[in-house]
Image: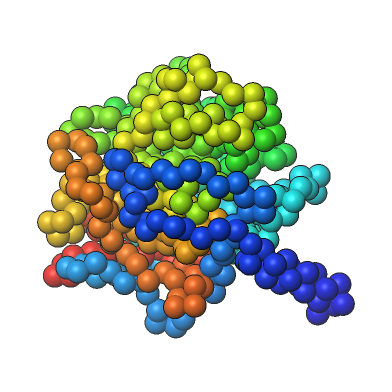
Length: 443
């Protein structure tokens, strides 16, 4: 190691040690920030952000998460490169977006950017992006993929995927592309067609863009996260962001579907009502108890508060100038998921083969906190539904054990999806694994 690298490593270690001693600790249990009516204490101003990183170490040999009673977990595929998102094709093939953030410009320097760089590096989120989609196939039905093929490569921080007819749509960080697809394809070399540009640019703070098709395939819905924490770069930098867009697959028309969503990621259709739901990462740096990430139904034309308010009309005093007109119409989310849990993945349980407690509701992948003491997230949970709405006070743990006793991350769950047999697949971008959760008595 060169002297420069040694000094750089020392600076990072020293910076992290300094930052880890700063910031507040939660005064409420995590459960207080969960459910339809979370407790929202007064915000705490953080001059220096609370930093509590779970350093990424990966799984020890033979290590695995802990599955809920009545279920078991096994590795569906290992040796991947930062697997973030999943899509299951009608024939049972599983697509995995192996992806990470695009390079950031040196000009994006600030104290906050420096802190975030340290956080992301330690948490395993600063590795170069593989920029590909890999196809996994279980040919013998034993719950383990025995065929792995690069379906698409040379992409630009890909994330969301959706199949409509013979078109495979992929959300790069800066555009939605369409590729020709035929059932059984293991590699696509044909050129793409750009169907929609997405807000990106040099800063591109929240780079992940997810996709979901409407049940009839006539429309795509695309998430675009904010370009800042709370609009500190100015609202002109947020044009078209913190939103879900609708794209007509027949004529290319697009429109803003919902806004004021700081960082929406996973989306899912609730089958009994045909309503779109999403999970949203809320803002940081006003205390370990604020603000709860959430899951919500998405209203056409709805505004959800960001950056001016959170969880309805709770005004964020950091945002200048204020917009009381927008705060007044901010929609209260349906279900809080706990502060700083980084809830990303979302999948409805329709068709699951897991036991009865998971028959109706939403599976959620929680990537895990950096701005909270103690840690939150780092697990997969299930929120039961009844009559198309969340029911019960608390989510049910599906997969836990992603953190060591010392607070280091063996893995971090991201995307979730049901496979063709109704088992739950979970992308783990630190463990470089796709896990498969199945009924203990089944396959």
